[in-house]
Length: 448
Image (cartoon, rainbow, N blue to C red; front, side, top):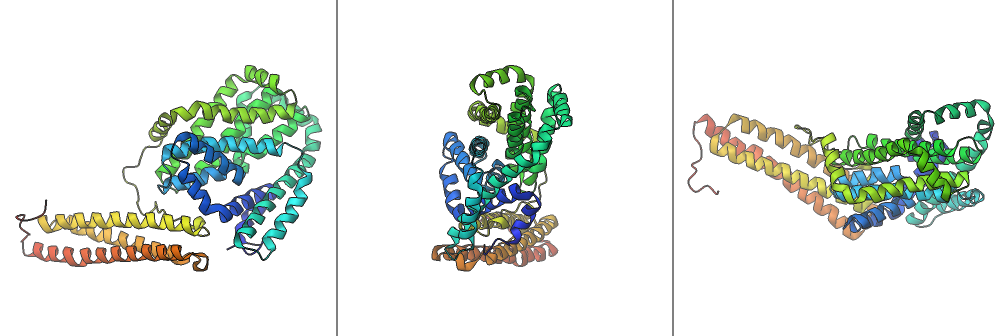
């Protein structure tokens, strides 16, 4: 588990700078400290779309990133822990959550960064409980984000005063589509719409960008922020891909409306927020709140559109859609939940073997015998994967109840693997001998 700040899980984030490292620390710290409760809250909060949106909002406030929340929700959806419609409601709430985070970060809290960094290091390096160290990492991540915003303001100060930058942005003001695309690309490269919105806020405060261009850039940043989750779940299965695609479609619809009606929308927002920085924050908040109010009642239609855009493949590799997720190994309850789901899939494959065995016994078809052999290899592969996954859990961190559940999952998987061996070597072998003797079981007395 987590023993210090030199954990290898943080190395990729270091290359992304203080902001990326801060987001990664917040995400991993919150998941390590409250991962079990988070899963319970999300499962409990998906009874209706309003509560689902609320818990998606709360989760983003904790993780400080709608991208991290989107990937997490998509992972739950791929593993049948959250229904797709409720997951889409949670995504809408998560989008609003990241806008509220922008409101908080827009306040003059830079002075708090050093204190949070000191507190985070002290908690994470201390000898307290595992949860305390995880909370320390989340606090450290928040401090690094505040520090990164302060550094961003200092670094971009010369750019905001440069005539070349003013000329380029002036040209973008006359090409709203290009401006939205540029902002989307920046959000994609940074895997965060939050950083781009904060940059636009600083440019607006310096008078470099006007209201219409600022509104367009905010819309483009929101569009670009929906792309990294879609790319990140390409190996998660069709349900996760559809969910993130639906989120991308929702944000693209909002961005298109903003690009078309930027002038009247900018005038409307300017009447409420006179200060340029507050204008950007309010625009970001209004954009996501409007998407929530508009699309929350029509989630079924959004899901159907995503299903049409991304149809289910006719031949889908079941082995590639494993429910086992290595990122959950630090959260035993969640890891055991996906292991149990994978064991149920093992049961489905074993049941398919029994169905083919009946065909073999009644018809003696050679194709059915070959199908049983293929299914038996899949059963062996699933059993091996479940066994290794459960074994990799840190047994020292498991409670007595979790230990018993892990044993139950392993026993279930082992028994199913024995069933597969019996069907393949026993029933299929008997049927093959009967086929060689041109004989078959009589249907009289065969259960219907």
